[in-house]
Image (cartoon, rainbow, N blue to C red; front, side):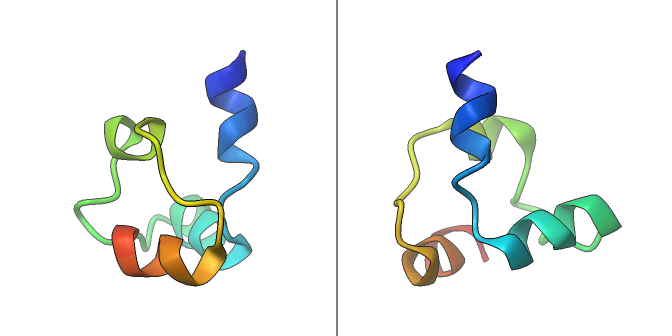
Length: 48
């Protein structure tokens, strides 16, 4: 359950891209389940 809750910390634009199927190819479930920064600008840098 904690993994799912962590996903709620993703930046809204990243979540929207995932839901629209427009995320970058390297943004996979395995990738977002790894530790990621809590700051949205840093998330965009790491995941985009």
